[in-house]
Length: 377
Image (cartoon, rainbow, N blue to C red; front, side, top):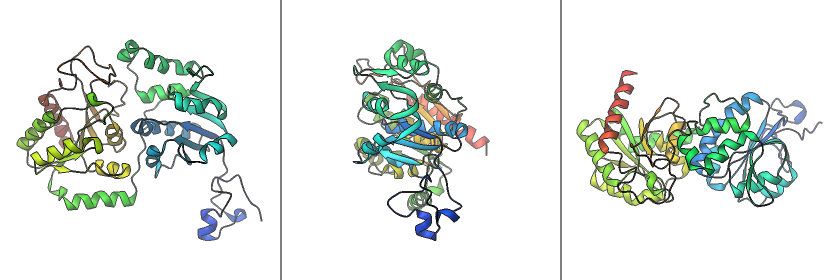
């Protein structure tokens, strides 16, 4: 009998799933998969950024087809990797055994694309033959591993460079790693159970009676209050949509921070359906899949809808629209203001950049997107 401890399926302290379920032994196993080129990706924050960073996986697997990819992240991002066949292992910062395991491991390639002190500390000491991105030096400052990462570091350090940057996050991410960018999609795969969840929700609210479903992702979390459109602007938009056609269903999306505004909107318009603000992350993803057109700010919902290949209208103010890869499906709306891409948490201007995006601007774009969608059928 041969015990193949180098197999990716070998857990060490118990039988692998093939032995447990089928009685398969190592010497007659057709599912033997030796660990090849070992890659570690460190990406903690934010959840939406973790999701869009999965676009890197296509290129990595193309360049290193036999690679074993480990992703090191925080607990709140863990659900992103369910049903992701590209990632072999997810290590969670909050788990008690993660650090001790990382101390013992060595990787062929480490990728840390964030200029973050917290995660940069890990990229400094985790053993790897090659490292890309950023690390924390002995003075407590973030440094690039090589010249490929300097541009992203400068974009974070200088507002002037951030404002004029024309590269998407995905392109910059690939350049940091020294990889060719071919617009690989963000990876988000729904399970059969999650698809049944959406079907149940659709049946409960009789969504099939509508010719088109429009999703309104009304918030942007508590941290970035100026990334979200105003409640009254959504009120006006809903009225315009309803006046335009009765064959359009409207769904409201959001998290706990959007509970008050979504409840208000649902109370104002009984025909509007609130998808709920207490869903799990995976339930939120599944519910986003119900929408044909998704209207949102620059937030997690944008990246989820992009991964699910929805038609999207995205409203931009304090953050860079150029850094968002549109994949030919995202229509971007920004007001004509010189102070855009400020990344400020607070603003002294009145009206703010997001307030300067009129309901008419959004509705006109919405009609164009709906028209193009109808012509393509």
